[in-house]
Length: 149
Image 1 (cartoon, rainbow, N blue to C red):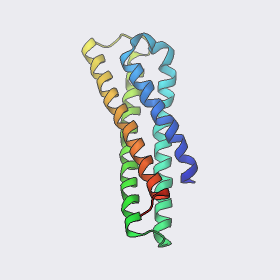
Image 2: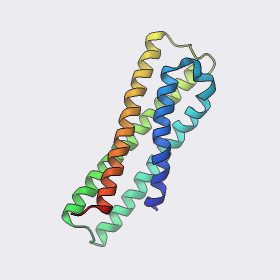
Image 3: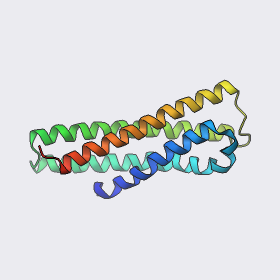
Image 4: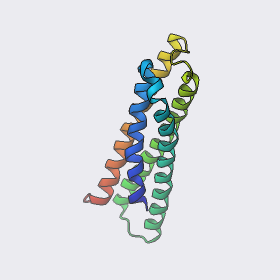
């Protein structure tokens, strides 16, 4: 199951990151993309959570079958840690994106400039970190599956 559902996170987390950053910095585009950012702000964290939960089940099954070498377990532990971080960063990005969409839904320039800029910068940081940890999670997962250790 994990191998299938992880593709949803691979698609939706970067889309949320990109959409949130554009929404944060381009107030003129907010009326056109607000619905998509709001939808991604819900879907991406759910996809990340389902991926994390299915990965935990897969990990537990591998350990109970005693089919993991000590080095493999170390790689998988790092993979799981990265996946957990990815989930929490994506959840924070989703919540902050939803807050900004709600605050600016009727008027894209409703917030004071400094608050608007603060939202944009935080969305940029969270979006970048979410994308980075998604990459790191995928890389460590691929190493666990295809690596020689």
